Length: 166
Image (cartoon, rainbow, N blue to C red):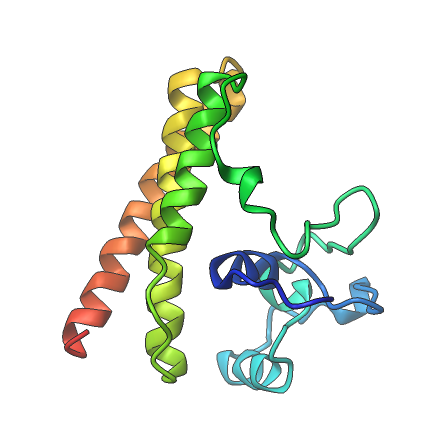
């Protein structure tokens, strides 16, 4: 996969996609007995871990239908005159995330938490757009769950960063 020019988007892609040329099969899924140490070793051995490490139930491969734009065209996230209110909201959330991305420190743990924090804030913003403009009840329930879960995780990240003077 080509490297994206925008770090937050690279995190989004790395969190949910397998490496090109790999196939995720049931054999690649760790058993329930897998320890955190083993998973940590897997992540260390695979800087861009495959989706079996990230989400053991949903393999994902890059195809022409789901490919991510590389590099991202900034016009894609710039609200346009003909955009619906929802589309404008989603684009604003993405732009806010990209503009608010913190610089990297070189510390993998600090960088992970800082980058995930901005990613989670964008997820909350996008979920709130869905709640305001969406019509599908199932999507609205999912959006509310995302708001609740991501806010909880943001608080956890904030506490972690605060303990480290970040």
